[in-house]
Every structure is written in structure tokens, then in C-alpha cells.
Image (cartoon, rainbow, N blue to C red):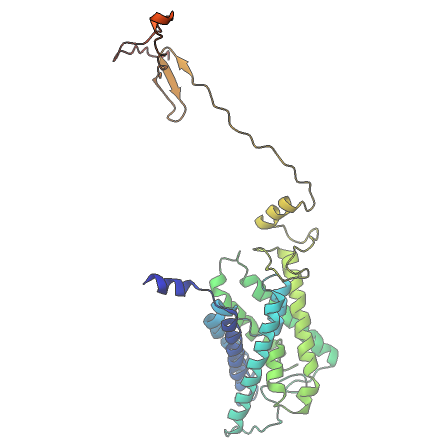
Length: 342
């Protein structure tokens, strides 16, 4: 591989590529998941597995590019947890909504042209509160909030860099989404994703549009709760991304009893003085150790053994004509060595 090719391979994805990944991934999620609901009559197992498998394959395909959110509730929770900046979360949500609308339009056009008995205005993909299931308003809100909270907690946990099973994160996320659909399809039609509901609501008639607010608000609340509670309960695996969280990426105030600080937070506390006074200690410069010489032998601390002592350099012999006295100098090639006492 040439140097230019290696440099190109190592180049991180830019924002445009991330947004395209989110758009395409959400498109596939809506088209496959909601498509299975339409063509199977909202069969519980088929629909739940279709959504779960779609998220698995898209997360493996685009996770390295954008993180594989495909859901505004995931992006909001990730921003609150310090994983991405708010600016990026907003752009992600816009791209996801566009991808979902394209997916809804493609699905509506496809099934309308097919002999599956669906026409514009019918529920498209078991969308929402007034679609397949019927529950009271408060029950629908609680179901969507709790299930989205569970979904985001799973996502934040399996993508935590401290987790040594992060390579299997898309599989765990897909299984969680499938299980969530098994719970809620008969109750609310299962959203846990504002973009997914927006993408099909405008092709599903007035009932879906009337109830759409619930499937925007409830998942965002559930995602926000998970984004706030996960780092408080379990700490952080790395420094919060600048522009995320509550304070533009600043370190959140520690809550006693909610998880131990990680190594980075401990270092950050020491540098910034959170909860303790930073004490500057003078640097200790090691003094030059005097050699140990005994009976012509010198101790070498590096090799931990006695070696012949280094003879001091003989002083230069003064000029007798200037009244100086000649100094001592050992004869060339002669050296007296006495073995040190044991």
C-alpha cells in the first residue's frame, strides 16, 4: 500500500459522510421495519425481528462513520452523555428525519403499487398510538418513555469504551430493539424513534398525524433520561466531547454516590482542584551520589558488584623552575588491586 493510500485510509469521516450515513441508515430502518409490518399485517415476530435486524446490519455498515444512531432520541441521549456535540446531534436528527421521510415515501409508493391491499391514508407500518394498538394516553407515554430509556441505556452501555465486548454492540442493540417491539407493538405500535414515526405518519392518515406528537416527545424524554443517568451512575470512559452535556462540554458537577470517577476524571480533579486543594510539590533533583571505595575497589550500583576503583587523574606536575613541587602519578600500566573484604 502506498503512503498516499495509507493516508487516505486513515482519514476520519467528515461531517457530510456522517450525515449521509445517518440518512441512509434511517431510510433502511424505516423501509425494512415498517415494510415488514405492512406486508405481514404487523406480525409480532416478523416486525420485531425486521426492525432488530435492520439496526444490526446498518450499525455494522455505518457505525464506524457516524456511530450508527438512526434515531434522534439516540443522538439527544448521546449528546447529554458527552458522546457527541449538540451541533452534531441536531444535524444528525435532521438527516435522520429526512432519511425516514424518504423511506416512508419509498415504502408507500412500493406497497401502493403492489397487491398487498394498502392505499394512501391507511396505517403504514403499525405507526403509532392510533394504529395497531389502543391504550390510554398516559399508558402510551409511559411505555414509550420507559422503552426508549431501556434502549438508550443498552446503547450507552455496550458502546462504552471500557466495555471489552464493544465489537458486538450492534448485535446487542438490534436484539434490544427487537425485544422492545415484542413488548409494545400491540400497545402503541412501537416507536422509540421520532424519525421513524415522522417518516410514515404523513402517509398513514389523520390518526397517525394527530398522535405524532406523543412519538416525538416520549422517545426524546426517555433518551434524555438515559443520557443523564448513565454517566452519573456508571461514570465516563473518556473525556466528554466539547460542546456536549449541559455546559458546552464542561465537566458536570459530581454527584456523591453515583459511580466512581475514572482515571481521567481523577486526573482532571487534581489539575482543576474539584473537591481538593492542589498542592504543588517542589521537584526533587537527585543529588550526585559519592562513590563507595574500599581497599582499591569501587561499588557499582548499576551492576550491583565491586569493580576496580577508578584512579583519580594525576595532577599536572608543576614546573620546578617556578618553585612548585612535583605531584604524585602512578607508573604507566601499574595498578594495585586489593580484594575487598567479604
